Picture 1 (cartoon, rainbow, N blue to C red):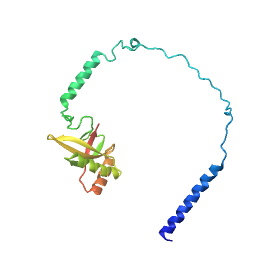
Picture 2 (cartoon, rainbow, N blue to C red; picture 1 turned 120 degrees about the horizontal axis):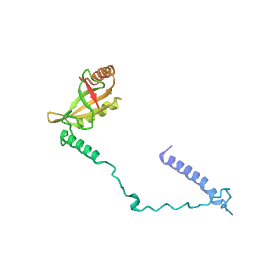
Picture 3 (tube, rainbow, N blue to C red; picture 1 turned 135 degrees about the horizontal axis):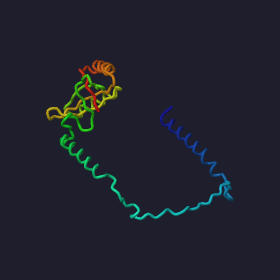
Picture 4 (cartoon, one colour; picture 1 turned 60 degrees about the vertical axis):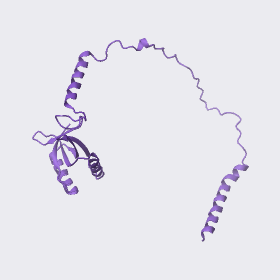
Length: 188
């Protein structure tokens, strides 16, 4: 069938279908509703007691919420944190960003492990590698730290609560990505 003939046939079928739907509507009688049917539900709306009027005096705080000893303790904590943290938010003791897990060499006291796959100087490179690892089904994230006043962005997989599980994943990741990952102590 030629294209023009096919288009004419399809157009004709379309017009006939539209006519079949709308033409009967032209000859239908309008429905008239004489009265609203009774649903059997009769509810009257009533307004309960009006809400009490509160004045600003009623809302005034008469006692302090935080005692002055608590304020002094909080200020002391703030001051100690300000001394430990540099302008970029890195803790001078752990070299990690404040509020992130501490990663260090594993020891006999290690209770949780993580796997350090790689380190990058550019955070974007580390993030791109994490995206690849996550798409492969692993739990991974970027851990930023300072080494000799330079930022380093480590790609971490884990954490794990048993050394055996961590070693199994380490060997799996070593084969898959052809890297030399290391086990680290994960402390949060």
